[in-house]
Length: 455
Image 1 (cartoon, rainbow, N blue to C red):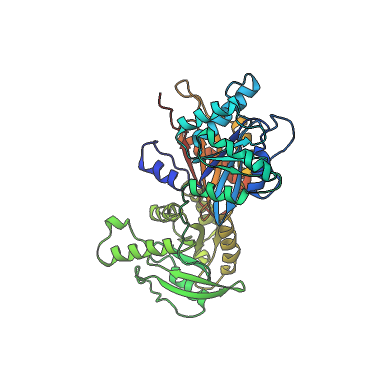
Image 2: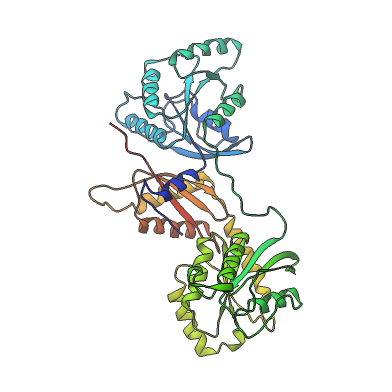
């Protein structure tokens, strides 16, 4: 599911607050930025060579230090007076600073302060971003004394570090974490234990019958009268060699606002059960036409960010003619959730309920899928070059880079030059699914437009 909002809206502020912090690494050419990035992420991913200008684009990597995750953006050498290709490289570095939460400014301690360094410092001061000063190539005690001269840049304490040998990198990373905003905790109810599955749907579609069949006992009251179940009923069920916690819920008859009496409270409890679950099995009566209420429940599960499996129950009552019309209804009414696994079952007899386990596993796997920042930005680079955003009013918004900020459900933030159209965000989501799967899971694509500079 894709969302977009005006930069000043509440939705955008929420999106911004949910972003994993971004650190831009900048500095003159050949001061050891990429070597330092490799040291921070703990693996050799950034290309390193003793020739200035090897890194030309902004390249993003996932990093973790002391249990906190952040995104590192490596940039090309930044020389404010550069011309030609190097001018464009410098522009990329400047863009990285505008979208970052903090900046790591890398200086060669063996060379000292240059005119280019002082020019970069002026730009960094204007950005208003927190700046950590790294004095690189401090391989011994003598070089550490030379690093103290960098106090004269006026950026505070220089952190002596050797990107090559790792000397001093721990203190520098501690300073980086202190400058970056705290990411929000990801909490989805209980941690560990059996996977939580909510059984939801309209009244009288067979939710309680399914739970009783799974539990192999009369766990829920079953009656032909709609609305028999009011409170959610939990049951630990052994299925597929594992234990699951299934939650039978009240039938959702109408919108919560339109319900009254016990229906109102039953709907509230059902919504709470959806929030508590990891994956929801939406039961649809296969013998009846798909109703507006069915599609509303499916949409509510997707909007709650839960993994989704759709089970067409009472399949013993579905004949050839009904199957034909059901296929047409699925194409028409479930067009927003083509990613949800579908299974055909008969809860009353237990026919094909064993197919629920592969569907649940697939949905939970898609729900917890994480794409590395490198793979994501390679994908975005290909996507933007093949299908750029349309020009509107003489302007063409561009995706600068992206990062996955959460799983359960997979949530992505795109850093852009301006607001992307909702249709383009939906296109990005569709292509993400084609490349990375996310079977059975909603996908949230948010955007973080670059703020306009004040004159």
